[in-house]
Length: 277
Image (cartoon, rainbow, N blue to C red; front, side, top):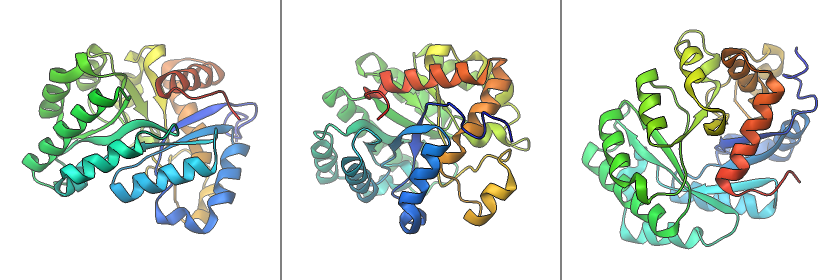
């Protein structure tokens, strides 16, 4: 195990972890301690449905300065969009711990909602982010053309934007960079079967636009030592962010400490976070 992977001296911000997921209920405090020991000092908890957004905000309010929250409706849940739901997200956004709107966007891979439902919910959340002047946490899978067109139409009115859990092509990446988006990189880059293309694409991301995340409990980095993941039944958690860092740094030919420094600074600027607690 490398010193970086062990978390020695790191100060990392995980910009996307689904800590409202029920898999964390039994060992939440222990999970946070493992994250701290691994050098993950702050975590943005993703809200992807009304219930998870409310829970994410509650978790952030219980651990000020350590956890923060987002609030949005993931495209999988787009059929649930209503004016009342939008009003509730607007109310949640008034809390200082709520640092971004989203997760929202388009997902034509699973199609748990129709394309029309997804576009409607996405358009409504773009308008909400513009109204509230909040950063926006975005999701796109197999929907690049429609997603890019909608984002491009509103980009000038939006605050900062991150395309989270980026897994698409180098061409798609550069489309988003041309719109001044930040890019979130997960453990997908650690998967030699599916994520090898990211090893080249990630070099295109300017230092000031790079963010890293776990997307826990999903996307466990395949380079994480098996003895650390075995007892967790291969559940991902923020403590494994150093392995994402390590893969990103190697692909970009940068020192891990430099990538840690710049990605944490970017996250704090993007979300308006205070320094580490």
